[in-house]
Figure (tube, rainbow, N blue to C red):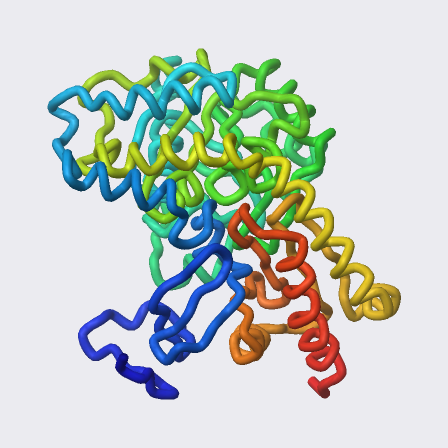
Length: 404
């Protein structure tokens, strides 16, 4: 195998990522190896994508079988696997219809189009959508405009109009920001913000927003791209509040690594799009659909929702014990999240920990400058969670002791 230099260069690839000097070669379960033979425990899961871990025998066999049959046909024809995956998603969400695409960005873009057409169909000429501070919905011009991160938006103006931004978990500010505004058509948020720092919406707030949307005839659109597909211990994070959205974008973990995006719609939104209103060349292709179907069946067969809840609680408790002194002093502000979507919020920037953790054999990410994000495969064991704590917490403590 070719060794990777300390600072690898990619002369033919656009410089859009701050990459680590690591090139991964293969994986097994929650572990991956680089081209130099170095082993890592994967607590990032391809950024909440590799639901079944790496080289899962059921997924590998299903994809190998599908490749020998059909990979792509286009949506000019019926794709039976689309109906099969749609049925699985409808049954688990309590919603009614699904549109398939390939990424979370596309799913969120479709949700924004649904909201606008919902407004136009009601005679609203300039529909407006409520979005949130610290939100992240993608990097297209529209989803970038809905995103609440000025750093991500910088250099790409003018942004798309038609968004009203509010803070999370404050129903009175939501009401004030939309008071006497007949153009509002939807409220759009992540049940747990991912890129924004693993910030959960409170259960009471979710119920309050659902009630407000019902009262004012708005669509409730919940972005479950990162926090959905069993990551919190239920199929979708909003289900902990006992509510149901009208529109729910999905992606990331839906295909366990194969690109799959979906927009699941309830009765109020399921018939908004008509032929010609929206589409996707690759969306719903047989290979992606087979990955989604196999992911869901395997999650159920192996009890991965319960595993995410159990191992996630074990991991969080382990982190809290190991960082008890730092939590008490305020050096660690909070350990938050649910299931296997956890954020450790430090009192200082901690981007350096990504490389330090990798050097110690652990893959993590840092988001919102000060938050360590852990989103491992849902197959992670308690023993592997203990290893995450054993590797990561000493690195956190050492970083916090360093002079700024």
